[in-house]
Image (cartoon, rainbow, N blue to C red; front, side, top):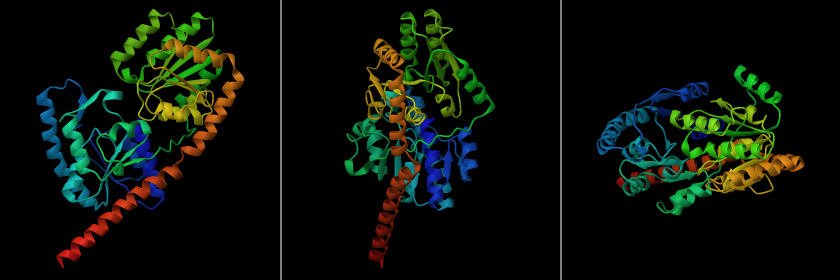
Length: 384
């Protein structure tokens, strides 16, 4: 996912600056393989999330809290063993890192990649009021990836603790045999190729894109939609039903999960971002770096990235008629498609790069370490 990719890019950037990184994860998974490629020492400690979709039973919430408190002891032991200087939690959905940092008197950074409820319908097991108060008490800095996320959390945390740092969004043309096969298929396809990339989850709202394609087909426009991603089976079945009911089987295709979607995005003409509320919108920037105009919902972080008639269009979330009109306009103005793509590419390459991202995060890390060292010196002097 996006937060994991951001974390891998940051680790790579920090290692190039001579910073040693370690990782603690809650389970086995594809991220472990990537961390091992980067030679990052890691440990799996089976802690739980302290957020779940609304409606989680009280006994489950209490059970997760108890388990996390127990697992915090294991995290403390591992952090002490590695002799780290700063503990860095890469999502608000976990709490054991913050608890461990507090017990070890270490600086703690909470990197917030999500709104929580607005994008994934997640609620804190302890309730918002108590959990956010705990987060404020346990953390020195909150890093956010967009102004939209910052606006939400500045209601709960002081401005001096919140730091806006836009991501790097590194891209690569590295292609597997499967990606090469899909690229060839897309190159041979006729008509305007639209693409939407993201988990198959209600909040990503791929249905807007499907309905817009149906409207365009009714208007006799030769257009196709490619859906990249996997996710909730129930939502995928809903989308498949929508495609069948709309008689779009020959115009909409699921490509499944693709580890590196960038080479596939390069084969599209237009990229769509229909999410209810993106905290940032990594795929939007990937589309721009691929030189594609992006049409996105006017909400969350997406509206910080897209400028109408410059690098794409914004449309009102849920208004698939409006989305169809934006796609239709680009179909009828190929010169603007090219110009918007070039504008977006230049802007994205300048703004979202690993050198700038690493430098800004490293500045925060060094400041926290300096503050800790000064505090430790003061305590030591007082004791003497």
